[in-house]
Amino acid sequence: MLDIIYHDNHLIAINKPHGLLVHRSPIAADAGEFALQLLRDQIGQKVYPVHRLDRKTAGVLLFALDKDTEIAMQQAFMDGRVDKKYLAIVRGHSLDAGEIDYPLRRDDGVLQDAFTAYRTLNRAELDVPLGKHPTSRYSLVEAKPATGRMHQLRKHFAHIFHPIIGDRTHGCNKQNKLFKERWQIETMLLHASELSFIHPVNGLALHIKAPLQAEFLRVMELMGFLTVFANNR
Image 1 (tube, helix red, strand yellow):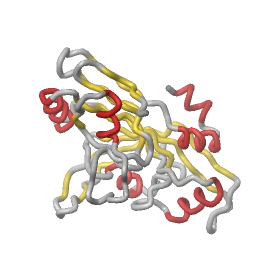
Image 2 (cartoon, rainbow, N blue to C red):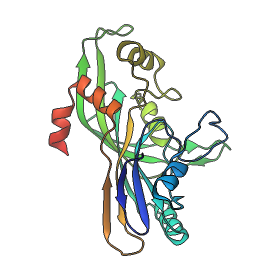
Image 3 (cartoon, rainbow, N blue to C red):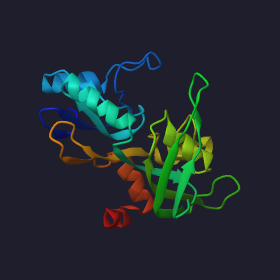
């Protein structure tokens, strides 16, 4: 059963687990379950996805319950009228705050503007040697992408040399191997934590938050992030 975190007559949101595809895709032929079909069967009603999350990303995933709302919400995302917040655990000690203004290229070669603002919530240094370094450093960051490009946060944090832990495509293979072998963690540590927007039907401000998944919480505990994180929310 999917975790439904918001539901009204026009919109429904779930806390998508890591590893679940939003819908069928030819690039993931191995998948047998999809959020779209699972949610439809769970509530007995057709649902319409209004945005995307990567397969390995967890958190707030929003669906419309009718075509008009689907169109309105998709336009709101395209117009930048939806505020998005993500949490990520990255390699190294990131700056207190920063902005990443770095265009990204689509699969067809088209270059698109992409902008992400972030702030560092906490840092950790573990007594775990890796390569030439006697310790391992990590940061918990809150990211706010102003645009919605494919793999934007994954590419942006890799661009500033703070790749997201567990990102096999754009991340650090040495770190990913360390987490797998030492802590049996293969999850990509990226979580869509909040969506804020004006409801397209009733005009009210809506704020949807998704709790962290178990795998992310386990790493938070390992890093000693939980207490400071709770105080920052």
